[in-house]
Picture 1: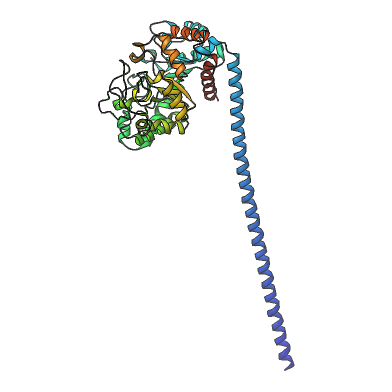
Picture 2: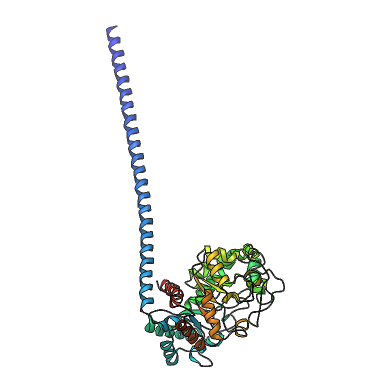
Length: 419
């Protein structure tokens, strides 16, 4: 009996020991688990803090880059003469600068012209574009002359919308080829197709040396009788057009080509062609805000850097027939004031009928600057326009501060494309 009792006690001791051991092991496991969870939580927290710190550092770097660019921009502006600043306001054809009938290279004549008039940029047409090697060399030389003269690059601009407005698509010497009209792209309903157009055109232009393209066309085709825009527009629905415009804009920007949204406030509502003469829309501002201006509003919110002002008149908005490109109400009060746009405003070509038939070159350029434009595209006479602006500043019609405002925007954008 005593032996049995001893065995029972021994067994009980074993059970108790095993139970205690189990409890101890469980506690150890739980402690290890908690320590592991603590470590994981700590690692996650450290990773989050590192990510936050990286984001903060990135923001600081961006801020530092912006501050450095701003400082450099102000230094360049302060170092420029009035004449140099006025020249920066212009994008002209090489013929318009040099006086030659056809220009296909940038040699001594171009260098001498840039030394005298350090313009903001060139726009090239079909006659200037023969082969890829010729175009690259012409642009490379012109850029070198500009850098040597004022320490800034030129805007190298072109009208390459695809579809019916193309400078390369009909030339077998270039690889761009035919691109569908934007009307056909819009009809697919798939904005990726517009993005692909931006990538295709952008990569082609960038490889040749272009850094600015007068596209995408942001016009909403609201007037079926419109002929000047027609198939150049993505369509009749403002939201579809907006989606397409933003997608093409992104494609161009990814290829380091500056998109130019056009033609503010929307050429799709007109019947006449401003290339030939007077064109207008009878729409009110409220009507434009709910339709034709949607692509521009969304483009501004997406960071559009350049918007082209059309020569169309909006008499039911401003009360007279002044073209938008020369209207302070349209450019300063509405585009900058109401829509909050802070980027560059470029005029449509100032040699078009709507301007050239009503104003001298000097009058048109001075009025455009007074209205709020920054870049003056292709005046009928560059030299007359240039002299007219200098005279306007000297007479007090324009202030040098107003010139500085536009040139500062131009320098800022030029510095950003060099980074």
